[in-house]
Amino acid sequence: MLDSGVDRVPISRPGFVARLITTIVRLIVPVLALSTAFLSAYFLREMPVAEGRYLAIFDTRLDASAWLTWGLVVLPGVFFILNLTSRRYGPALTLTAALVAWVLIGGALFWALRDGIIVDFEREIAPYPEAAAFAGAMALAQLVNILTFDWVRGIPWWKAPFLAALIGGLAFSVAFSMRPTASWDDALIARLIVEAGLYFSWALLQLLPTGMLRRTIRPLSGFGGA
Image (tube, rainbow, N blue to C red):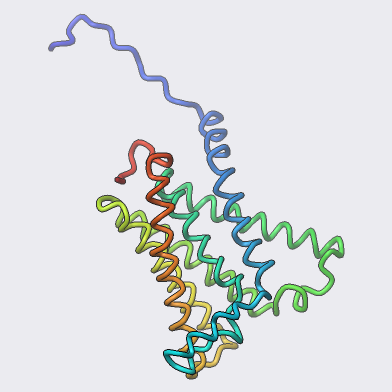
């Protein structure tokens, strides 16, 4: 009864329009960043990483010079962006940002095909089965990344971004390798090993910028983090 006789002021909650505008504003940077990461991977997809041949020092089957490109090297940047977004806004908005980025990319492809900017999708982009396998594997990997980050976020601060990036990357690698056109042989096993090393390296190295951005990108109220 300590507040007896004191009038309580009702809490004013933001309306639907205000919440919608806030969500749209929060989505802008993550969606643009994700779209940029995918575009960078696309434009670098035919630029080989000549240094991949040095992996043959460990085993001749690990020579990645024939297939490793800078597009594959920069692709895990998607998980770094998702981690920062998850840290700040949580899984719901991060999943929405990933979905919106896919819609924008799909819309851009449709527009390019309709206007003749892309004449032959299979020749200029990728065969349809491979493109569908990539989209499905990456969508699954993004979901795994987001759920993993939300599951393990907290103290120590590096645990969530490291595991989310690593498990998300491995999920993409395995899922894409399970496409119908892939043959499970020694070459594919060697490729999976190299890709696992790539995603482990990304998961480890991205902790440096993540640590530097911790004070700038703080979790909103209601989300754990350190």
